[in-house]
Length: 423
Image (cartoon, rainbow, N blue to C red; front, top):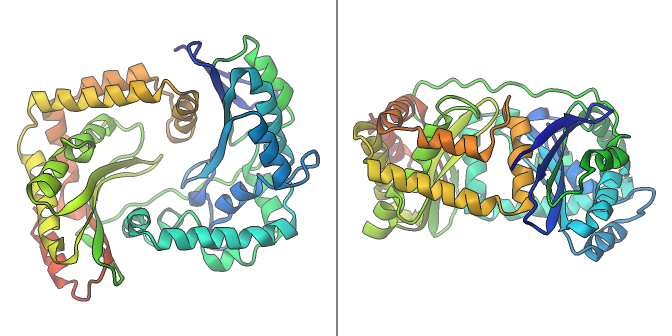
């Protein structure tokens, strides 16, 4: 796959990633803005703006018209807001690509922020927030990042504070939109079965996108000298925990090794945590390792839901796996298996035009330089057992250890003692 990384006449970054073997094409418009770019008064506004982009334009006066037109081309469409980026995409039959471009360009250029629609959407977003709060497996990541980053934009939930959601007016949305949505923060990605004149078509639909002021985010400042613990006390039958360590940012020299450590520990049904916590001990139905790479920070964490009375055993088992992987070299066979798993999953993923669009779009936000799938796998295959051990010894340390927990936990002294024992 040979991509083109270009600029349109208005300065908008434009990436085209052709996949001749597919019948679909995806357009993704991704912005370098998200909840990390907010302050206490604007927390949640990035996500709320994303919702409002599907409501109305001059040509498409309400949400039903937009949805009906999107459905009429048989496409898949959605949007997402994260800590560091916000994106909008449509995936459709390549024969319908121009119609998809007409719709999405109208949305990102001409969306209205009508107070009546804003008032209706407040309830939708509050119920979305309630849904996350009611699901510990979905909520635990937010709690873990709160442990890591505290009372800062990086530690706040992307969905924002409910008191903000209830009070914003049209002017707040318009000001945010003018600041954060424009050529200084946006990247346009085409992926899939693309027309030969892709850049010319991109100019047709997106050249009106203006420059924007763009307010950058606060840099994450990581400071920790002992294990940290945060418990959300909740009367539920299963305790959900996230036990992990601070790691490295996207694009760091340690990234490949951290990624591989995550797969070895908990990236599959043959991984160490799955084998030990579920298969051998029967402590959890779901146990996994998650690796997160942001532009200025990162972490590796193990997530599981266990019987309340089995919590201490499960935490001890996870910490033992952390200890083993930093003290003992990972066998070559296990490294190869994990790299082959990554390569196989990536091959499946990159058959789809929307996944290809995301691959390149995300990197424009998180990295200084785009890495192709081939380059990524080359870096993974270059990781040795010694590399893994070196990075494991750097990250699996008491002063990087963090535990977030949702469950009925009145006495936290036992948990603190378990963390303190980790060396």
